[in-house]
Image 1: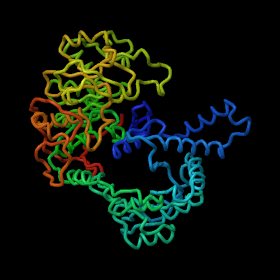
Image 2: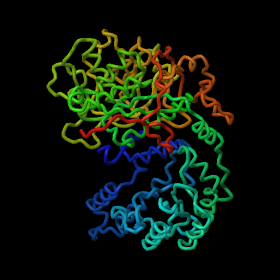
Image 3: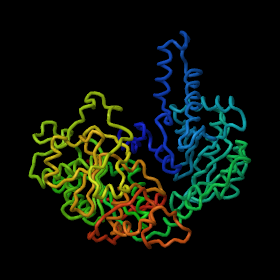
Length: 583
């Protein structure tokens, strides 16, 4: 799937490749989902076709109603009883997110004229299925929360309710009646607006929730609690007697801490999908979790890898200079995963710069592979070293296609999901960051690997393969022992990072980038302490991370300049990009 079209592909423990929304659920709720939690049209139609081929329908005509709609309901009921929070027994409540839009009137910014949006045709079978489902289970067992936009016209500053009125009317026409309205707006809904929505949408005013702009996204659960959204849901589901008040003290303290941070840590993100930040959403969240734990404000400098290459110096020298200025001004460098050869040379140059200038570096998946390629070329003088992904005929293939992979079928044929990595070096930064454990389980998504036939040659030249798979033949973690922090991993640690439990390796990158990793080792008792109500925005380093880490002092000086940036308040980190050009 193209990251420009779909955003990030999130990977689950069981190898499911799913929409990035499931990553948001895992992070916010600290749960582990499965591929069955992701219901798609393709899965439903395939299951119905398989049943028809087996003869389950006894020759009857297979139709959208009832066969497709029944399959959707059966899938929901099957998944609803599977626990995802690590506890035994079925869940009390199952949350269903129905994506897409309902027909609504969208207002023009200039003159306020309405344009009818007919909604997504792909969602129609799912809407019909949920309409049948709500009727079948009856009141008290189904609560429909309708998320709608309440735009503000810039000319007069008026909050318009027509889009919500039209979408609720369309929803009713499709057999669904909302119990709660969650209204997205730039500011808090005015009381007269709530009354109008209540009157025209037939929803109690107490059940109309404002989702207004906040300083950081962690304020949203607090916003919902303050408006008693949980009480409205419990009332509809008849669960008032069994429910307890939400415990959000630590969450509230973390949200306040985000607002108080001002001392920046700059990370250069070197990739080829920098035009859409959702392409690296989990990486950004993992960086944010680690930076908050380090009491630093995250500043992400987007560096298009193609702009670092020599061709750009000739064709667009301004973009070339801007990209290199951002890279050289960063406190740390991160090269995330990716596919294809576009921009690869720029990523190799970024890894080389970090290695030669003692800048903290974290390479993820492809970011590890290009670090290996740079090491082979620059340190081992193997100038034709390459990956067979980029040059199938290379004479020095230091990265090769995995033998169990398929070269003819692209979909679902990668090495996916949670795999175990065993540490083969006990005195290294990675093992200490993970808490001196013997192995870790992390999620993977790749087709290529470091050539096992060249491992001994790499190790004799000074590159340490500190983590390997269960066979000992597949390289999982690399380090440069003499470097302040130069780590590459074949897996994706960002997928398991949580707000209160940052990824160990991301914590290492941030701590090394702001000179705090030694303090982390000297005061390990602070690791598991929750965030207190009294907050010092840039005080003593006291994060709560997965495990301990070890790092020598980092001498690279942080840049203090924050100009020419784009600040995204809802995610509470600062993003900068160099001059852009189409590639």
